Length: 417
Image 1 (cartoon, one colour):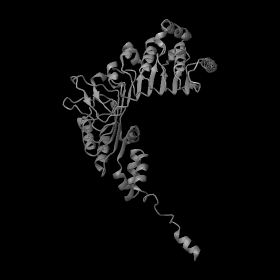
Image 2 (cartoon, one colour):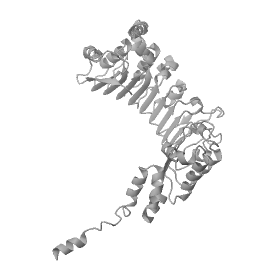
Image 3 (cartoon, one colour):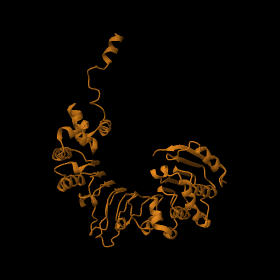
Image 4 (cartoon, one colour):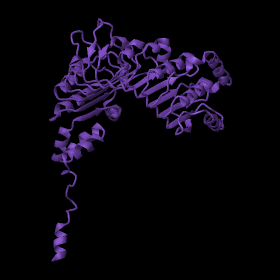
């Protein structure tokens, strides 16, 4: 009898175990599937059909277009109909919507602005919180319904035209994170300063006309301006320097700004500085780094990635060029020394390190001015041919005087990033 009871309690091997999963688990499963496979789960059972109709994180990315490419060809019409149909099916708010079309020129006919307007109007009225839009062409314009949408919290725009409204001093009222890439701001804003009251993170990548995007963001904590074609005046950054905690800059900006960095206000809250594509062969960039560090008394973390090109690998006289670049700077040593200690700087990371005279000079200065430094991580550039360079650099760096007895220097191998 006991054995019979045990047999009765055993689950039926033919029963559907996954259809009765909690809604939250089903939603996570759908989120990890490509949109086509996620939609096909609706065929499994009414339980999964309900889960699909309630699913609110939709990603129409490159995988979506590639999967349909063989059967749908190069016309965007079928894709537009599918996206519209899926959106209108939703029985719950679409929390996240991603659209990534990197090769719009291959499609005929093209995506219509009216299609975008329809999708964005639907999303803005149905509680969308995250938008990630990349359209591969600046002819498409972000509708103003998104600019004023009260539910959007995170927005990523790439290669989309963005015209600032003239009659709305407050934009993106609830947005906390803005990322703009390959975008140009228009020139017809007449000096308006736009309020973005809840913005905490702003990232500009290869954007133009940034000086036209004048904003007031009292909660801004992280500011990043990077890319090969970034354009921004020093005064635009100076306005936000007192409040932010994290600053990421392209090295070319320090070259453009020159001695204007000396007039920056003291960045009292700045804890992290990240510098990208910093060219140590350019004296003005190194001076800009020093001036920026002098304005950052509460810096905790410094992260630098050097600029290293293929030409460096081919140039046999590279080190001679480095010495020549350093000679003029060394004639005025006071210009490359921080006047005060970096009292709470704990970690330093330098990538694409070549061991040039100016790079070694910067490291030596940082070691001597950081009394609480704990760790220095240097990653060797992959353009260095000599396998003994790491040992040579380590020996030389270990001989530099250190203000912190705890400071450890770690040199990693080739940097292929």
